[in-house]
Length: 90
Image (cartoon, rainbow, N blue to C red; front, side, top):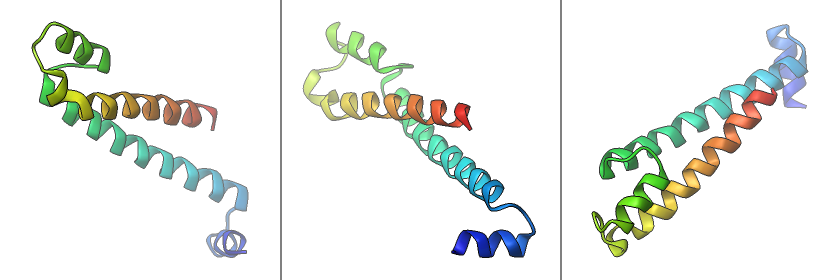
């Protein structure tokens, strides 16, 4: 298997290589998600999907203009929580 071959060449345990590789992958994914969240937050001047929802309810933004971003924001916040939980468990 490739993992064992690479671990052998690097002189580390396959489990260590697997865990560290997974950690780096998850950290990278988390940075991507956080970057997208920051872009959305800056676009609407909010910090969370709840704040965006409040601004929509107040009429600051029309629901039609923020519809896709609202659901993307919600999805990304969920992904951020999930990735953070997985990382905490490593």
